[in-house]
Length: 173
Image 1 (cartoon, rainbow, N blue to C red):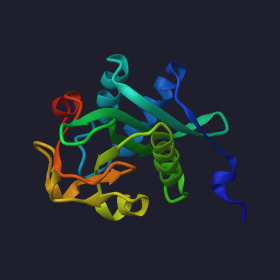
Image 2: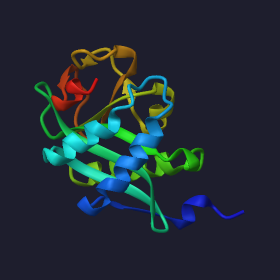
Image 3: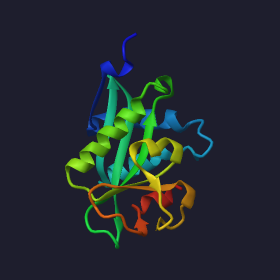
């Protein structure tokens, strides 16, 4: 059996991809119980406001089937660039094929290569643990449930602190 990722291309997103990205994000969160189904609106607002630090897409042929973005975050206690991974979206027809994992690994590799200090994510600890994210009681973000807020330190010394995310996340929560 052919590896489904053999035909998947992961690349930087371009403005010409935004309509397809919107569709993927909308479909990915349509039935998610933890979602208010407006993630596509958040992505559009972040894109139009120039708030995206990195956007990656997974393409299967000419179709965009997955999406991952990072915005900048701040943590006063930590020197260096901090990023927030959100959202990760895979078209439901492509679930369970490693697309989300491939996007996440590619994105984190790019952050490491550019010398990022850390990355935070608000999501399922069982899923994100495989990439090195960990729940750290000493790291938090206002308004987010501690049991889902995780951090991955790259070369930076691990520290505690309060992470401040892009304010648009609060508007779409």
